[in-house]
Image (cartoon, rainbow, N blue to C red; front, side, top):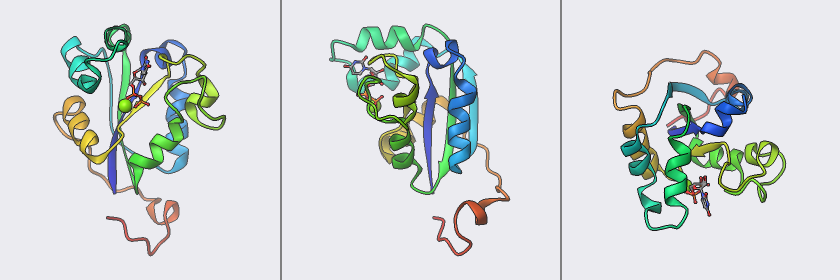
Length: 154
Ligand code: UDP
Ligand code: MG
């Protein structure tokens, strides 16, 4: 099992797409283990996107991410980091395949509605940044039906 850090970005909130985006993750069978509606502090946005610090789009990206609230989510599931990245689609809304979240709802390249961790290492760092007090541990009663009863859930 993996936990991924998701951000429904400012455009997702302002365009009233929070519910529809969250629904897609829920319907897929992912478990919500953290949710936090928040304005991202400038230093947190800078840290979150530190890997892009030298890129020309970095100042605009930080400004975008701090321009309005986001919904930060921690989502758990089997192989969830890769599964969620696939659900998001390609980075640029204009290039994302129909059927993906960005492909269905975004046409902008920068304003692409949602962030998701791209590796277990990134997820660990990002979860610490957005959920420093940890996630919420509980059993989902439908697990045997979402997976198969004999599934090895590690
Ligand atoms: N971004 C941008 N212009 C670019 C590349 C990226 O505005 O040329 C923004 C976009 O919002 C993207 C974020 O920077 O989601 C982080 O870029 P990354 O390459 O990590 O894409 P992601 O992991 O979000 O698919
Ligand atoms: Mg990225």
